[in-house]
Image 1 (spheres, rainbow, N blue to C red):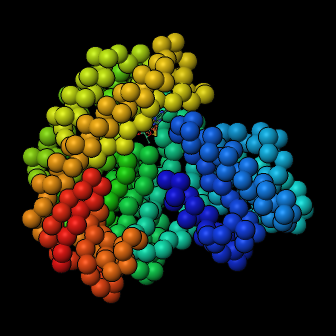
Image 2: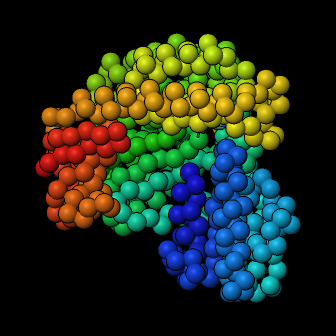
Image 3: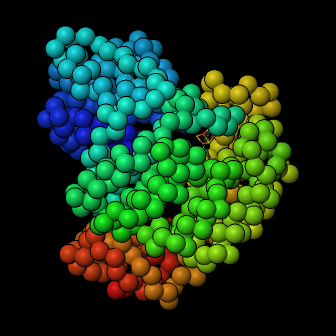
Amino acid sequence: MNENDTERMLAFLKELRYRPTDTPELADLILINTCSIRDKAEQKVYSTAGRYKRLKKRKPELLIGISGCVAQQKGGELLKRMPYVDLVIGTHNIHRLTELLKKVREEKTRVVSTELYNSIDSKEFPTPEVEGIKAYVSIMRGCDNYCTYCIVPYVRGREVSRPARDVVEDIRRLVDRGVKEVTLLGQNVNSYCGDVSFPELLRMVCRVDGIERVRFVTSHPKDISEELIYLFGEEDKLARSMHLPIQAGSDRVLERMRRRYTVSEYLNKVELLRRLYEDMSISTDIIVGFPGETEEDFEKTMKVVKEVEFDSIFSFKYSPRPGTEAATYKDQLPDDVKQRRLEVLQALQKEITLKKNRLLVGKTMKVLVEGESKLDKTELTGRTTCNRVVNFPGDKGLTGSMVDVTITDAYANSLRGEL
Ligand code: 5AD
Ligand code: SF4
């Protein structure tokens, strides 16, 4: 989500003839795009900004801006806390970036813009500036679910969908720039509610000439329809992978998280997906140490993880977010308990991922080639339909094409293979 916001900002900045640089010392403008999902992400903002403050001392004309969820939440407070910051721009104001920057430059003032809107202006979503063959396209904004631990509804506002034709138009433009794989983005894509249903939007996107593969994130387990599940059997371009955050394996915890599904409802959906498509990969998000999570609750999460054997897991220690309901719960757990649970869970998943990766050795899989491998220029890197990274020797002219690769080795985070 944040990466896509950055790409949208790059599209606007291009109008003012800014170009990206990897060297902060050369920059005329540094925009820090922030995340407030957990406290650790939020704290990074202050340390990162502190580093750039020094650059500004040497080069006073350097402009520094803060965008994203922390900007949305803290607004003008950031200007007070960091006197060297020129611009604070919230999550709904990205399309005003050029206008605000001009104001900062011409009027030599500091600007804060954090209004939230209940509708989407098509100007807000320029075609993102991307490099390479993969792109993210936002199909909606915001979230109405109010899970009790989560800051997103407060910093990204109400759920609003983009019209399908705008989404398809963006994707056509991305294809013209060489994109082959598109990931449709939303906090909860299954409640996409534009002029067509989400499955219909997926069909339209799969029909765009030049697109080879289509993915989407994130799906809320309570909203996955059977129509969507059956679509994987109808649309060849739809990648066989699904990110389906379970968050916890105990019904009691799920209820206090306000997730609105039970573990058995979740498991039924996974079971149907796997029964229909044997190559379907399922990844998930898990929070450990939610307030009041007992050892028994945590064991239930471990049991589900063993049972489902997820292809991969993103796991986090619960982090109380000011303003959310769960932050006010009295039964917060100490960090050492959270840390231990996180380590135990991650050790279990490491074994499962490796075991599942090893089962792929000997199989020949379709890989969409993304380009040269970063570690070894004689190798190519790409992903399988089930979203695993595969490295293999090959000519970089194959970038952007779908090739058959036989898997020869499996590691914790990637596979090796040969054409
Ligand atoms: N603490 C820890 N993890 C969180 N997530 C969301 N809010 C919090 C929080 N307060 C996790 C959820 C979500 C992922 C994007 O981040 O697992 O799916
Ligand atoms: Fe946050 Fe996702 Fe829940 Fe929305 S559905 S409140 S984004 S965890």
